[in-house]
Length: 108
Image 1 (cartoon, helix red, strand yellow):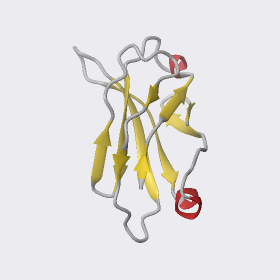
Image 2: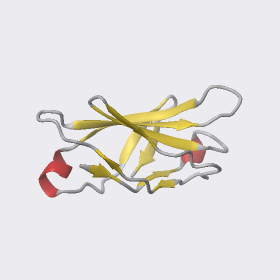
Image 3: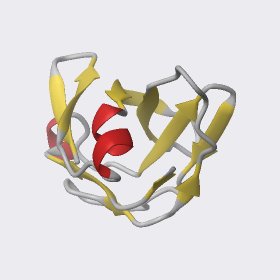
Image 4: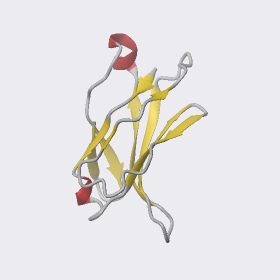
């Protein structure tokens, strides 16, 4: 399985000047996108990551962070994404809300 083309909408609602990056975790496999410096309110990440599927494990964890150079990075939000559609149709172009500290943010 591979991921590519992650997009976020309305990131400016959570952080006024975001420099976001995305962390993906599936079992013990972890990937991190490059930081989208001055990514704006609707950044897109075109990086491709390949995961080896594990029988019985049907979700991937997505976490979004804001990169900081002086202080620790800020957690923006996360989501567990179910893989049933990917496994049955070969792709999933759905949108999912991230759970944030203050509510929800849209991830595509």
